Amino acid sequence: MATKLADSNIANLGSKEEKAAKLAAAEKEPAFKGAGQKEGVQVWRVEKLKIAKWPQNQYGSFYSGDAYIVLYTWKESGKNVFKYNAHFWLGKNSSQDEQGIAAYKTVELDDLLGGAPVQQRELEGDESKEFISWFGGKIRILSGGIESGFNSVKPTEYKPRLFHIKGRKENSVRIQQVPLAVSSLNSGDVFVLDAGMTLYIWRGKTAGMFEKRKGTELATEIDNERGGKPQQNILEEGQESDDFWKLLGGKGTIAASTSDEEEVKATKRAESDKTHVKKLIKLSDASGTVTMAEVQSGSLSKSKLDANDCFIVDSGSTIFVWIGSKASSKEKAAGYARATSYLVSNKRPANTKIVQLNDGHETAVFKSAFVDY
Image (cartoon, rainbow, N blue to C red; front, side):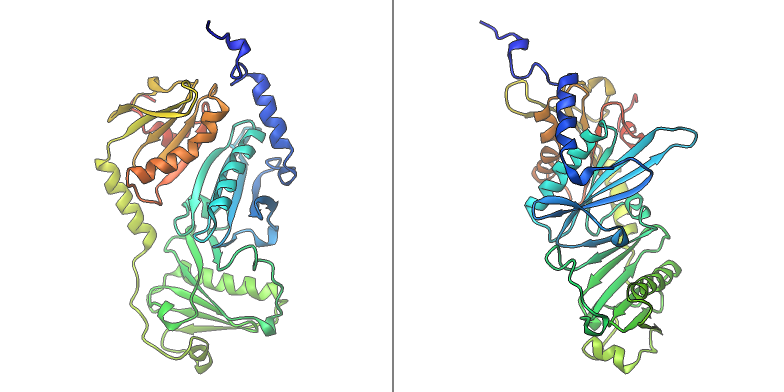
């Protein structure tokens, strides 16, 4: 005898009741209080398997050993409705547990905001221009993680750090903490050596103007954090002081200018997209477990999207996870994990972008993957 839908445990999937239950669960997260209520950026960090608000004075700074959630809220010109982008940033040394919680909590934040946010994974060293632009065109990557993130150290006791500033475009400059050694330097970029009470801004011979500007801005920020006490020294390549070399372990050979990694990656992605065969894959739990099945390849049609399920759209340089308006909680929860496993099983680059969006909130880039959108 067939079980009636009303008697089954999936009767409420996609219903008002299920959505209300999701909202209630999301509202129980105290760290999300006030999320998306005004325009601007909000940041949370995964801390001991929970999330906590990240201090505003540290916005733009990320620890390589941690995972973060970043919400950007804005209104379109002439409209009084909030729009959202929710990105989760994963440090290279963050744990699998931290990464999983960041992804899960981003989905929870999505529920809290009515499914409106476009969700995207950001990997350390391969952040999108959009993400970097939210922090004034630069982000700072620090070594360590939550265990060392809030250590209070006096400037006079500070352990020297070396920061690498790279990016030829105004809104895509990355600041990365690198090993304190001459081997980290190269003639094409700018480096800031933070020695506590002395800040050295070292400029390579062929460094770009945006890199020089951001190097000065970084030194000024550090200076301000210490009450203006440190002394700032600008050093052009070939004009270094003995103290500078001593901090780096001695004078050495400076490497030649390196290529702009962002431009190299963009070129490779563009070349890959030209020959890539697009695929549309359905995620469904109709059988009781979530299964994946390819439904189309080559030219994709939006008519194949079904609001009852979730879909992975492989457009080449970006993998989209599309959540149907009537998709089950199980399907929605499986989306990001299945997209990640899809990358691995198909031997795709680990830094391939993964973007999750909901039915009715499709972006122009997503629509461009289809011939009839």
